[in-house]
Image (tube, rainbow, N blue to C red; front, side, top):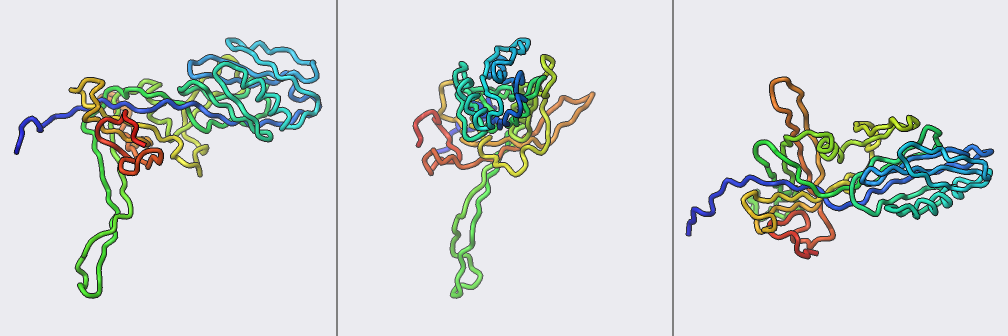
Length: 304
């Protein structure tokens, strides 16, 4: 029976992200005739706390006393191999509050133990020559703020026609070979933190090497994302009806693994700045296959 109460205007509160620890890889180099003595690199936690690792080769080093940072000394021997440098550095880094670190050959994997995005590690004014890559940017769930217009969901079914000689071109049925979910949201708030979250899936950030205290993080497009999988950057996105209590999940739309693809941005002296963003949805293999892309309803339940 028809019910007028089922007719709605449904503005949504959009919550995007999840608790993700930042993961960085640091590729070490060997010491050559005490070349690493007094060299250092800087790393940060999600709260912005600044640390630095400095190298003391053969007890000849001096703490560079980087302004605003806490120093952690790594003792090396003259002509230590890159693997030996990594092993010694990992032992120091894993003892720093808020971090775990492992070494494999000459490569360090530095993992934060607290969720949230942090500035990327970088060389200091006395550069070590190490290579720094953010493998997974940390993240936390956050309300994306005001949006503009409608949120548009698209459902695409990939179907193969079943036909037979006996029935000519008549389509007897279809075999579903997959489906694609995508949707678009127009973001209206453009603070630096909002821009970093919106563009973070497709862009990268950098803290300049060797500029010491004045180093500030910048966002940008470059070549670092080329030929790399996007799945590891996909995050949970939840749309919650504004009229419902925050703990009433009965009409929530939850996408487990959504990746943001900003489409355009316009700068105008007359119109409010908006950023239309398309989201692609991937399969989350940790969830039950019936709802491995999205679920409508209480997503806080155990749905594996």
